[in-house]
Amino acid sequence: MPADPGRITIGFAAPRHGQGSGSGGGGGGADVTRAQLFAEVLTGGPLSRTELALRTELSQSTVTKMINPLIEAGYIVETGAASSGAGRPRQLLRVAAERYAVLGVKIAPGAVTGVLADLEARVSVRRQRPLPQEHQPAQAVQVAADVVADLLSSDEAAHGQVLGIGVGVGGHVDRVAGRVVRSGILGWSDVPLAEPLAAATGFPVVVGNDVDTLAIAERWFGHGRDVRSFALVTVGPGIGSAFLLDGEPLTGAGGLSAELGHIPVRPGGRRCGCGNRGCLETVASDEAVLRDIARRGGPAYGDIGEAVERARSGSDPAAESAFESMGTELGRALATVCNLVNPGRIVLTGERASAFDLFGPACERAWRSAAFSTAASDCELVVDSADDTLWARGAGCLVIREAVGATAAPPRSAAR
Image: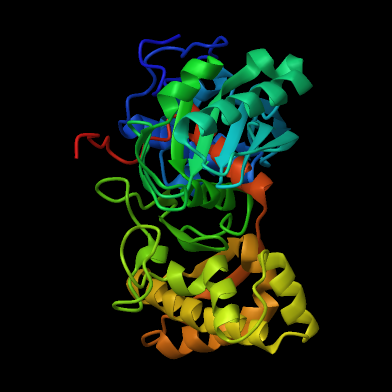
């Protein structure tokens, strides 16, 4: 075990089970460049060094200098050559997807979901275990460790290839310290997570906000592949968001940014899980919809899925109205996103995105009505539902980013 198992220190050499592999890149400009080059090969490969230089606006000598450590570590391999007309054929580069594996874990109030994936985040194994209703931190760590054991027992050959574990958690996460500063959805405050999970599993662990991890997955493999800047908004048990600007996530001064669900929209309104009143989550989350249905005289549903079915069938007018109201509140929030950062695309995802047919029309009307100037017309809205597997896959992307030196944001002090 490394001296500080809570902080992932993968660097550019393959780690042995239970160990980091050295000092890593340390967060300087070289790490950013390597991460940028890796992402270009990942999303657009196979590519030649010349094509990489053109895509990144770097010199070919810089590309060669920065790509060589990735090749030596086995993250990228040369794969044949392409003719460029006159002159020597150009060697093509691709990600060595099968060389290493990563573990991704999503901790949610009801369950812990884990995946085993390769360097292209292709999932080979998925496992899930229920989390006790109290979801105390120690319980969550133990269940997460059990999920990791389940994943590895299903593919023992991958055991020695694992680079580390990425964990996605809702709320404010200090990624550098590996702790959850505040999670309203889990009821946690100042909870160390990376260190105890690393101690329980023997692997280095990196922890991130779950929506941020999902945004990385969308940037690399989903609807963010062809755009440099976009916003991700999730709807379901909570309301989350993440902004990727010029290819990098907006993290904020203390690792806290894009908390759309906790923007006050109803002064003096219902108390939110974060402790404040009238947050967006109190009027647009699953719980808010169920509460609104009951307020309108509808049945007291115990499950949001049943409410979706009844509203979709037209057999419950109260449910239809509640989803329409939720869509209006969400649409105003999307307008706020557009007015703040003017993204070219918003990816609307999460567990409840599959019910867009119920809340979508009201959402789009409110979005376009509340957006300033051309903020809405500048933006494409893409709807993409996500399950726990996708969330866990996004958590695995955290490990891939760390492995190739994706430390674009400056280190943040944990003493706040």
